[in-house]
Image 1 (cartoon, one colour):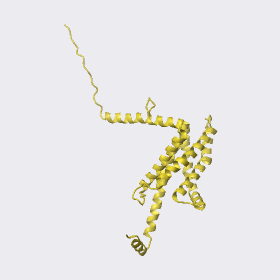
Image 2 (tube, rainbow, N blue to C red; image 1 turned 60 degrees about the vertical axis):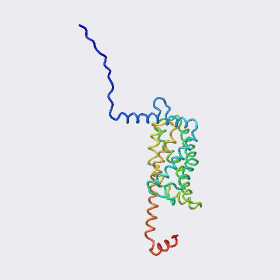
Image 3 (tube, one colour; image 1 turned 120 degrees about the vertical axis):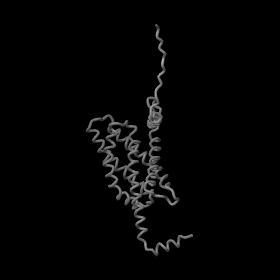
Image 4 (tube, rainbow, N blue to C red; image 1 turned 135 degrees about the horizontal axis):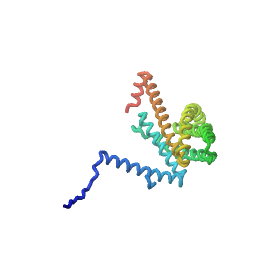
Length: 242
């Protein structure tokens, strides 16, 4: 007696949420490139190596403009035209592209050349000290000066007053965040990615500071308006009425 076994075809059962997993995997592959190294991140890193300054300028300019737009949205700082896009957005983009990025490129390049090939713990600590005591003060002074000009300061006295008032608070933030960011970069990041990484850190911190500043300014304006005499408000309303 012969027994015949028929060949069965086993089909994989559909996995719940499989499509979502595939989409997430495709997005991750597209961003990082996966094994093929052809994703957006790989292309960006390639541009950093072939055109470092231009890539940093585009990155810094875009992040600076986005920072201003995002801070205005969070603080509900609406322009006179009724939207969040103000004249500060292109000015911040210009600052990021033509001032912040070239300055950061120069200073970080000098820092990396000073400590090239030095991987000891002492060298890393010394690199952090140089960054916090020399590089950060230069960058923050230029930042505060640029912000003063963008805000409308035109005389040396106005600019210097803004720098003096904001220098120590900004430096305190830098002294907290910069050592952590630099230690992370030393441990995990290739040197050509340091400036974009620091740009992202500055974007997060700058958005927070900008939002906080806008909220304080709007609160001061509302308080000032509420303290005006009723007669002054009525006269102002008559003068501005069409």
